[in-house]
Image (cartoon, rainbow, N blue to C red; front, side):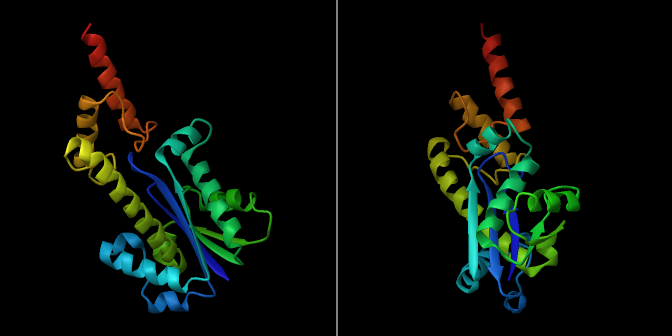
Length: 218
C-alpha cells in the first residue's frame, strides 16, 4: 500500500491549516483520473476529483488545525514542527508500506527523518519538494487538503462577512482584499476574530498599529 500526505493553508493569516493523507494499492487509478497538484486545477475539477478519490481510496484522513491551535503551538514549536506532528499523526492512522510526503522543510531529508523518528512502525518515507506535482498519490492528498480548506474558508467567510459586509479574500497576507478586511475589522472591533492567526507578522503589525493609535488618543 502507498500513501501520500500534503497540506493546504500553511501561509494564510486567516483560517486553518489542513493536512490530508490518502492510501491506494498503487497509483494506476490516480494516473487514469489525471490527478495532479491541486493548485493546477480549477475549484470545480478539484471538487470532482475529491469525491472520486474518497470513493476509491482504501483509506483517507483529514486533519484540520485551527488558527488558535496554530498560535498556541507556535509558542513552543516552529511551523515546520507543527507540520511534522500533523503529517506523523496522519501516517499513524494510514499505516502504509511507503508514504510520499510534500516536504515542508527546505531540507527534504530532515523532514523525512523527523517524521520517521516519531513513528512506532516501519514505513518508508519519501520526502520531496513539490511532491504533489511529482507523485499522483501526493496530488490526491493535496486535492483533499485544498478542498477541505476551501470549505472551511467558505464557512468562515459567511460568518465574518455578515459583520462587515466586505469580502474576506483568500486569507493570504499579501492579498489586498484580505489586508483591507483585517484593517476594517480592527477599526470596528477590539480584536481579531478567532479565525485569524495572531502569531502572523502582519496580524501583529496591525494590532500594534491599533494599540499605538489608542495610546496617541490619550
